[in-house]
Length: 419
Image (spheres, rainbow, N blue to C red):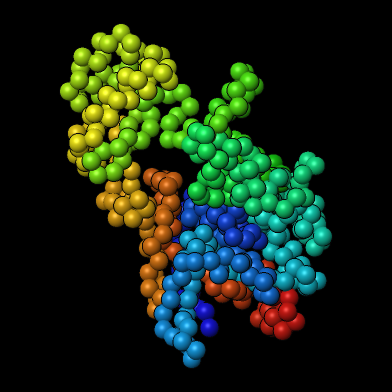
C-alpha cells in the first residue's frame, strides 16, 4: 500500500491567499503552474480520476521504506510528484460519471481558477468545457495548457515536451556545429508553458479583481518555445539567417563560453570593453587592451579574430588554475563561474542562502529535498517546503468546505464511484 502523511497546510497567508485553484492537470505542464500558485498562497485542489490518477505518481525517484510480503517497498512516494504538487489538497472526481461532473461544477461555482492540460476538445466532450463552466461562474479564470493551443489547424494534435522543442525551433538550434541537433536536456516546453501560464493566470485574476469577467488563458507549449528562441526570429526576418547549433558559444557575443581549466571548466563572459579591460588586468596581460586587432568589442566579435587571438589568450589565463582559484580571483570583478554538477549545486552554500533547496517531511518515508521557489517576495514570502497529497487525501474536507456537501452525500458519491 502506497501512502504518505497528510499534507501540511500553509501556516499563514501568502500573496495569493483567498484564491482557490482547481488543478485538473497531469504530469508537469500544468501541475508546475498550479504548484507555483500554491507556493504563493493560493488554495490549490488537485483533482484526479480515482480510476486513473496522475501518471507522474509512478515517476522516479522514489522515497521508500520497509518491505511488503513480496519483498517490495511497503510504502513509496514519487519525489517527482512531490516536487510539482507540494502544498495541494487532494480530491478524486470521475468526470466520466454524471454526478462527478456535477461535483466539478459545484466546485467551479466557488473557485477563482481552473488549470487543465488535456488535448483541446477533451473537456468539451466531457460536458465541462470553458463555455459551460463560465456560465456557472463568469469570474472563472480557465487556464488551458496544450501542445499547439486551443486555436489553429494543429490544435488537436497530440504533443509532448519534445514535440514543442521540435515544432518551436529550439531543437534545431541546440548542439554543436556540424553535428546533429540536440534536444534541450530538460523539459523546457513543459516548464516554459507552465511559467507563461502563471503569468497569464495572474493577469486574468487582476482583470477580475478590477471588475472584469473571467477568461480563458490559452497557452501552447510550441508558442512558449518560440518565445524562448531569443533573436532567432528577427535574425531570420531581418537578415534571412537561419540559426544553427553553435555549441557552447554565443551566436555572436564573444568571449561568452566555457573554457577549460586545471580541474574542469568555467564560463567566462568578458565581452564588453569594460569587462575585457578588467579581465586583461586581472590575469596579467594588460597589453592586450592596446592590441589594435582586439581593442574594441566589435573587433573581438569577429569569429576569425576571436579564434586566432582572443580565445588562445583566455585559454592561457585559465589552463593552470582550478575552478575555485579562478572564481576567487574573479570575485566581483568579471563574470566567471565554475561549471557545476547538480550535486555541486545542491550542496553549495550559496544555494542554501537563497533557500533554493527546501525539505518536506514525509514521516517514515523520510525527507524530500527539492528545489525551492525562485520568486522572493519580501512581504508575503512563498512557502514551498510542504508535502504533496496522496490520491484523494482531502476528498471529504474539500467537498464539505468548498462545495458544501454533507457527510452522507459524500459517502453516497464515493459509493457510486463519482468521487
